[in-house]
Image (cartoon, rainbow, N blue to C red):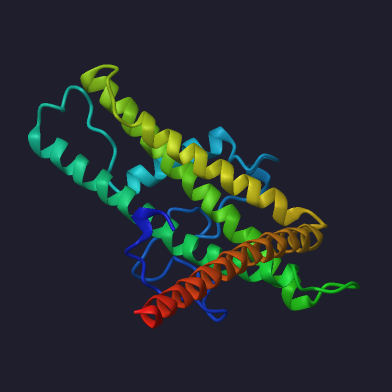
Length: 243
């Protein structure tokens, strides 16, 4: 789990892993009442169309009163202060939503990978198929939230450039977001493969072989240590007896 998600102590179970973040007290950063962008807006590589994402970001900023003040009014300390506070709260809320779904995603991802490795031949159990589809949905939500967060970071970067020039410290954050999003895209490709079960079994076999090999090495070391210990005890016994 990412370090910034360590505050999420919620226990995830089969009964709540598909809960929706949007409630009466929490507003999702995702469109369509928290369900996410429409399939027609998402490209084959998982990226939301630029125009759709840009429009959504503008709405988020407007609703959160986090639009950067104009250069003419930037000298007003109250406007700048409110902008900074509202922008920080918006990012905090989005991060909280990401962690909400990330913990659920990791829970069900482990579940279906373990199930995939033990499923026999024939048709797949309906429960497994449903869980796999739900895992894909959570993967897509996380991907979309990262894109929203990155777009907000870029928006903040542009406003900072307007005030302070080219220097900014958000490039490293953008790189981290890109790397995380690429991992999610890799997961999505694996989840959509028809032979996920075969790949999982193969991985489990390789893991078992490595584990068995490691166990044999440990047994050999313990055996050697026992021989040395027995020899040492025999040596001490002979030494005491000769005295």
